Image (cartoon, rainbow, N blue to C red):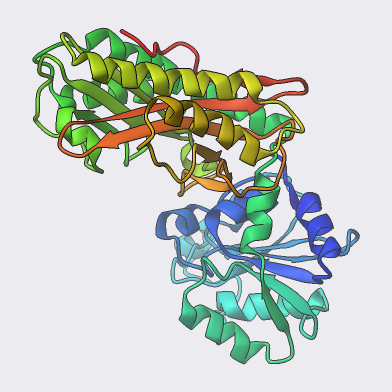
Length: 393
């Protein structure tokens, strides 16, 4: 991925923010175009950090452990790579063979915080307004920053990143096309095996097998494959088998691992001799989602998109209630991000938005439906990125 730091810098300037300390794995990736290994694995702030000035001419600093710094350098990134010392103790071959140290051992290790403070000084941010991801940072780390940088004014830029990520660039769109195609193919394979007597775990295993076989991404760990009453609650797949008349529901996705991009797609199928009213409900949910897809285009207020789907279901089922009918999606770990397709969202649809447009309905003790597709807003409408998996068996 390409660095999107210039997009973030422009947004910082628009909000009168002088710079930022970027701490989460996902947003470091967004700024740098790549991820830190241990940072991603541990999700601890400080393992890898980006310090950037809002000024265009100032190069962003990427702080990482000495054990990983050569990997960052190999990426030929526009960032200044600044390592800190670790316990790993990498040596030159001749040092080990001869026993002679090329350089004396340092008396004091440079910690991640030491290097961060150096970067703040070099970028002239120690007395400026600096953005932090306060929705990610632990309280203890935030307090340390306050103690070490007493003259800086910190502001929360968590939502700034969500806003930036809500409109995708072409490279990101191509990532979503690939991820969605892999997920869609795996979901299609699942649809071919749905039958009375098949268990939830068998459906899950089929999905996992085909996603992992792609060699490009992995199944989202939260992926749900549910039958009958299990579909009306959050639950991971179990041993329950499909019975005649059941609704089989999946709500699942794939993750691009160290690239973080993720997907979210659902289907709800009535198997065998389902209750006619259940089938009527499914038809109404499906037609509501289709109406939303037909209406989705640049300039349409998102709250109007919600109204189109919501009112269509309520006309036939007045008791229907639902807080939102979809959401933006970008880098994990969360699948749902703002803007949400709800009754109060004032933003309008823009080209480059990738949304999960869904019309769910859950009936306690009976079943669950979710009709959901990944959708790209184009210049004159929308493109469904998960078209292969059928909505009806």
